Image (cartoon, rainbow, N blue to C red; front, side, top):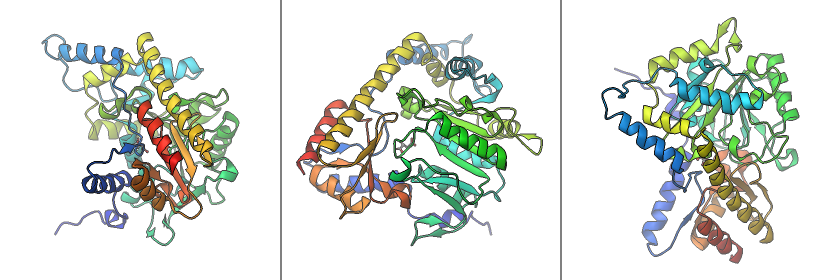
Length: 404
Ligand code: MLT
């Protein structure tokens, strides 16, 4: 008789955004006349920019012609895309990342979930609390998180690093030593950013203790402040302790198109073994590459037109962020985030839990957000709104919330 991976049975409920989707569907079915505004999941609403669409069309035409048709993509991704990434995301910021240290994938969510494959089950992870649920859930699936403790909303073998108002929503170095540290900056869900001096402390700590940092930089394009690093490799010594994961979803609207990449420097080793080789082995075995047309579209993001057009999109979303921040502040809420990230983190009214506030907002204002506690116990008492809606809907949502 076969056996299942019993770690899956330890997972509570379903994935956060599936739970929210179900609740919203029920409400919509019961109230078909209500106009719901969705500022919950961080999904973009603007179409792909013209430079990307043009590249998609051209690459599609390539697939129709014998001479330019492409079959399987190279394991690590097309060199044209990897060199554009190396040049624009790293070299221009003073960081040397070689093309064979960049692995193209179908997105940062897959990479941040799959990266655990190259680590032993006997590693202790540390995560921020609140945190993007994928890091914890995927470690639980691989048997690294211990058991779920429902009364605490925590896993028994995970080190939680509280990110509170008192610490400006940044984690402090943990007392107990982790082996794998997940950091995401600019942060999902709190929208907080970390400056270079603070990030350097983590790099120094990881190098000193022999830990590896999994750095999720999916929201890098939203950084507006000077002292906020765009890549962890801007910190000295990061190449010997950090893996960086990046996305095309938030900077170029590829949520439905799927493209991302992971950087693993060759200097990053464990007992002489390069993590880069392990990931290359894993990638080559379990993944057959992001589609050619999507990689060609991704390369268009780095053209002059592509850069200008995607920058305009980011400015559009950040205008929404300002509307949310300022509107909610005027309505008496305590808000943070929304300056270097497309997420606004607000305190729920004292007499309501995050999920109660979710229900209240859905029922009374027909606005969907994300309850902070869905991101871990440290998110209780908070609520996340995304700036990825349309400008008109964002204005209307804030007006509705103000009237409550
Ligand atoms: C979120 O809403 O937290 C994100 O959209 C999730 C994701 O990027 O996978």
